[in-house]
Each structure stands twice: as C-alpha cells, then as structure tokens.
Length: 294
Image (cartoon, one colour):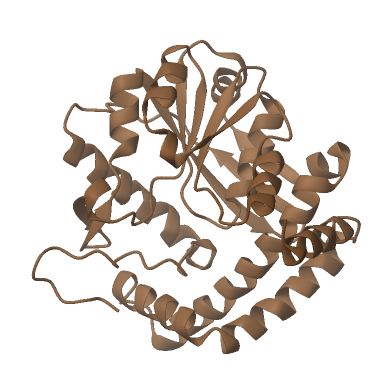
C-alpha cells in the first residue's frame, strides 16, 4: 500500500464532511488552476471542441474548456461524499428523473437492461443514484487501477449501495452475458477510444472515431433493452435523467447500431457541452493513412 494512496483516500474521507457549497468552491478553484497548469490536457480539450463543435466561436469554446476543467475537479472531489457520506446525505443530493414506468422497469423489472451511460462528469453519481433505487442485481465494468489500494477504494465506492458487482475489463464478455441473460442490469460506458483492436470506425460529430461496439453486441447477445442515462452536475448535487428505452435497437447490424449510439450521444452533448469528458483523446486512434487529430 502506497503512502500517497493512503493519504489521498484519507483526505477524501475528510472532504466528505464538508458542506457541498464549500466543496464545490474548492473544486472550482482547483479546476481553474488545472486549466492553466495542465497544458497538454488543455490542448486535447481545445482540439476536441474545435473538431466536434466548429460552429461555436473561439471564445465560446474557450469558455466551455475552462468550465470543463472545473467539472473535472468538482466531480472528482464529489467522490468523497458519494463514497463516504451517510446514505441520507447522498440521497438528498441526487435527483433521479424519468417516466414512472421506466423507473419501475429498472428497479424491479424482469428484462435485462443496459444503461448507456456516456462520459458526462456525473457518471459516478448516476451509478450511485440508480443502484440506490434498484432491488435487482446490477453490474458495472471498470478498468483496473495500478495502485491496488486505489483500485479497491474505487471498487468498494462504486458497489456501496444495492446489489452491485464490479467486473474488471479483463474479465471478458462471458460474465456480462451470463448476468444479462439472468435479467440483470449493466451500467455501460462505451464512448471512449480503447484502440483499434476493440473498435470499429463510425462517425462522431462527422469525424471517423474508433468506437467500441459493445452496446450493440451486449444488447443483441444478452437480449437486453437499452436505456440512456444522462447525468448533470448542478449546484445542489446531480440531476440524473433516465431516458426511455430505444426503439428498434439492436438492429442486428453492429455498425448501424454503433453509429446510432454516437449520433444519440451528440444530441446529449449539444444540450450541455461543458459537462462532457473532453479531456479524453477521443480521436487518438485514426483510420489507416489518416493524419493525427492532435
């Protein structure tokens, strides 16, 4: 166990007791600092915004970039209370919205459900909020952290409420499909670039993007419906919108389905562009012969 990990986790446990306005103010200050200090990552954000939202003015994109660093810091610090504050504090800060029949289906239905959870900064809050409301088993897939202590801290935090199983990405697809076919819920975050071996190229804001087709494959093989989850960081906590299941999905055509996923995601992003995870090098994998975006 590294000393830095132990101190970092201890610091987060202390932050869990701060009033939310104070914690958010701390996060805002840290985010503004990161915007100026983390220059390589700021260049990634600037380039992503330039490629994906070219119709915005340079000043509008700069404003979004500054705000996204604030959300990076605030959402990271919010893990303190999401993973350590009393249940009643967590519940009071999470506002889950959706059609009653969809919420009921998620909470205690019999059909397998895949929650399409794009990388908005409230994704951890959304997972916590929904598992607090679910009576049936659910699962999530995560990337193993290098430090075992940090890895265990994140795993325990993400499975804190409800009957949740955290599967490592290296576990493969078999345990996921097995659980889906039993009618469980999968919280899936497939909108990142995991390299050419796991991806297909489909448009994302009109640019070919290496995209994991797992949403289509899991829905098809697991006989699951897909419900999008869109999370928004707010002054009082988070708003989590459970959207209606997609009609005519999956189609049996992985490329068509994955292109639709990106197209739907574009709409969610346009509604709140500063809340999306632009710090990720979304276009790092390029089609053969194509120049680097970055």
